[in-house]
Length: 92
Image (cartoon, rainbow, N blue to C red; front, side, top):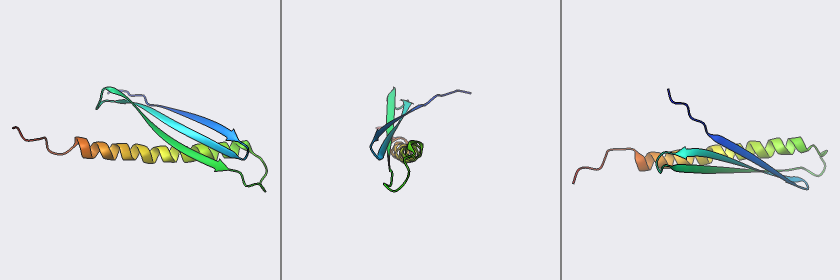
């Protein structure tokens, strides 16, 4: 059994009633013997009539960034399937 570790780093910034999150997934890219980064982004905006509770904005922005990251990672996998699977090229 081979163990692997992927790392996700989440960053948050707040500007007034807006919170932005970035989720960066770092994986070893075995196709290119390199490291790949997939980035998801999310934004939350507080309604001016709501009480200011920064944790809610953080949670919403991060959840949206992780959802975006999931979609982007799925797109990477789909592209890899198209590029790297199927019958091998016939011998010349």
